[in-house]
Amino acid sequence: MLQNNTTDLRTDWSKTEIEALFELPFNDLLYQAQTIHREFFDPNQVQVSTLLSIKTGACPEDCGYCSQSAHNQAKLEKERLLDLDEVIEKATQARNKGASRFCMGAAWRNPTDKNLDKVIDMIIAVKKIGLETCVTLGMLTPAQSQRLKAAGLDYYNHNLDTSPEYYADIITTRSYQNRLDTLKNVREAGINVCSGGIVGMGEKREDRVSLLQQLANLPQHPQSVPINMLVQVAGTPLYGTERLEPLEFVRTIAVARILMPQSYVRLSAGRAEMNDETQALCFLAGANSIFYGEKLLTTDNPDSNHDRALFEKLGINTRQNTQFHTRNNHHCCTKVTAANPAG
Ligand code: SAM
Ligand code: DTB
Ligand code: SF4
Image 1 (tube, rainbow, N blue to C red):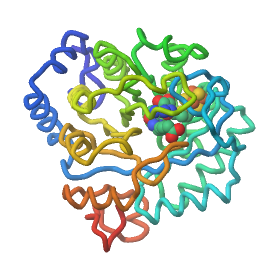
Image 2: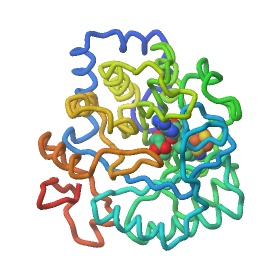
Image 3: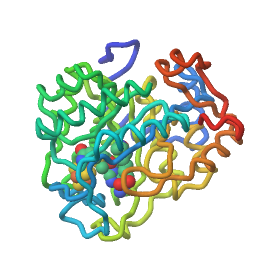
């Protein structure tokens, strides 16, 4: 049995084993996921990240789900790379609202070295504000990954998106292997990996099995695993795709939790169209991270007041950034209440 380098983390999951988890009675699956979750995490604590699109639209890639692809017809205000001041302002707002991580996304196939200089300035500035940093900039070379590590970057997000089998139906301009190569470059540079995928793109359950197998069998489990429900954007090829049943989404979260017990599993895009009950089941299934703030990159996320109220109803605390709470002498975990919107 192949073990990951931390404790007893397996990286040799077979499709048959993963299918068997998906096929468990729902209550048995959730019980198993919640039991594993409690071995490694506080079950009532959720990590919150805020997203900012630092360069929007006109992307040369043809991802079938994406509002930002130049190949698609989504209505979108294109924007050049934001100025440093604007990024600092947004990051400060995010920190004051209680985010512990700030994720900056750019609609690039890959960054040029000149653009990377500018992103590095942003990373340094956001860290000074007291936030963990994450960027998602497309494909990276080993040298670019090392530069980001030297700048102090905490996480790099690069998703596998779907199974290797379904991939060509969704994207043709960049290969699955390209994605695995970028993840290797990031991992070998010593940056924490954030990698997950999207469900609800018309894939079969076997594709969800295969995507999770790819993620769980990487040489090391990604530290963060975002599970996105497709946000259907008018003008993209995937607009109008049959929607995934919410309980199948919950199952996907539960299986991710069981396969990757020490990773933060993020209930990511798609929350704006999910009711509170589905989200509560996702937390029960082991999701312990969300995107927080009114916008994802280009689409809507739930209102922060709504999220705070939901957390309060569920008795969920949010994990604060160590760097921030040390400097400001805060407690490690903050209970979210209307009076304390540190959510
Ligand atoms: N351009 C970079 C890249 O793709 O590598 C970074 C930004 S890209 C928008 C980051 C991720 O967001 C994608 O890999 C995809 O998994 C997710 N995403 C994009 N559009 C989405 C949508 N409409 N619904 C759900 N997830 C989406
Ligand atoms: C991830 O897995 N989901 C985020 C983040 N990583 C960069 C992006 C979601 C984008 C949803 C569509 C949009 O807002 O454009
Ligand atoms: Fe470009 Fe990223 Fe959107 Fe694909 S997902 S079109 S690479 S911005």
